[in-house]
Length: 311
Image (cartoon, rainbow, N blue to C red; front, side, top):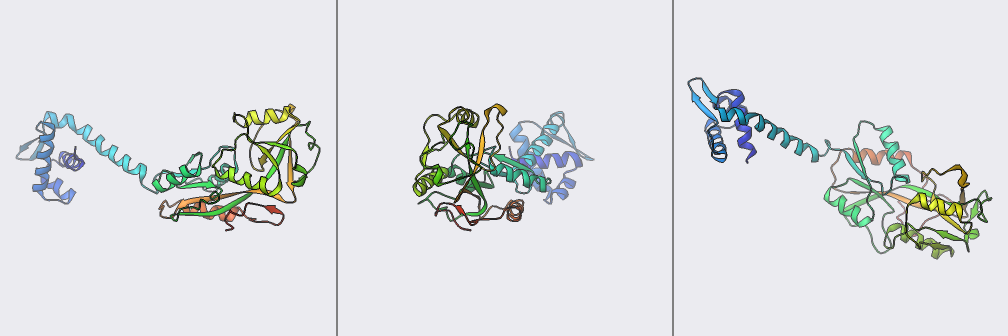
């Protein structure tokens, strides 16, 4: 059904005259008559009866009028749902408990007037496809893996270098340390079942192992962070890496320790990615907010992979 004919029908029904409807729609009276005739053919009924006073709705026209108005309202809602500036800013944060979620909470507190949709996409290829299609407006990532540069139509900016910490149970050999050096971690089993080959975080930890000779195990199914911390708490031979801003809650009886890693401190590089032609008016506001609230890239005494862009 042609929405122009429906819109013309509603205008004529409300005006009571084809001439007034034509003036409202900025078309000729002949165009109004043709549109009404086309709609009547589609519906197989008469919608108007001509009278000396203008045009009156038939019984069928009266029955169709509320549905025609709802069709036009539905069309307006459909357009508004995808029109930039009227829809929420959609941002991929990868995981609900990570640093990116914290950054977006801070943005929301500073800009409560901006509607947000927060989504969680798994891998960078999915995120880039979503950026290109307009399904999302921005994504927090580690930029790219070695040998896989970002496409030319995707822009990025570093927003946070997040230190890694060592998480151990109370029985671990390093549990009493106030901090540990990277060299002290050599020979200890660091269990990280969430590492998936081919992801940007897998590339990060591969470089960390190659650089410092660490033992990182990704064996076993990944049942989530709750099972991970339960296992680490109960297994003196295991530890894991936890990003500094990862938000976790565990029972007090676990006795878990979060220990800073130094000399150097491995930092996980978070970047914001977006499509360079994305017109959403809130996207520059997000970038400006992150630029003013997050600093300290490549601080002395930290380590990151060479493939991370320095900007």
